[in-house]
Length: 163
Picture 1 (cartoon, one colour):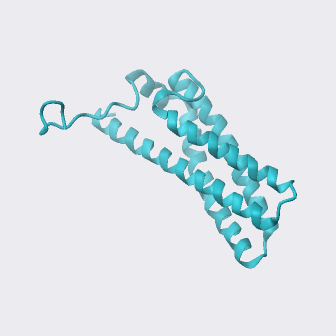
Picture 2 (tube, rainbow, N blue to C red; picture 1 turned 90 degrees about the vertical axis):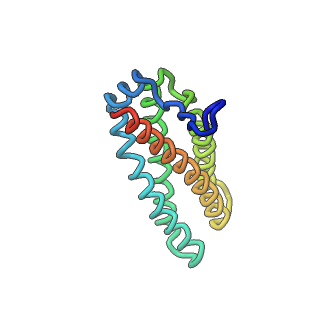
């Protein structure tokens, strides 16, 4: 509640300034992110099922591996286009104030997914590769939850401002 008056709620700080909001709404990168994020999640969900199927049955490794490559490629693409979005909206490619922690976690997600790619060419067992993939996917879920949380906050902020 508000300082000095527990009955008055303290307003949450705005995610964007008016100028940042205008840039966000005008840049093509917002649309690109809006398309890539759900596409990446769909590919993730399918890939997760394929990875789990391979772990349980021992079959379908090539298909699981292909889905991992596609998921990782989309991750790299969304990270590059997201950095472009952040540059247009906030004036810096990464670690802008409102998205600092999302970017920190995103870097971990990138490292883990890159490790999965390296593991495909390293003499690791298929099971070890798939377990590493599950760790990378778990980190991706955390990062996706951060994204959804910020998306929700941005919608609430926009609704509160009548935009």
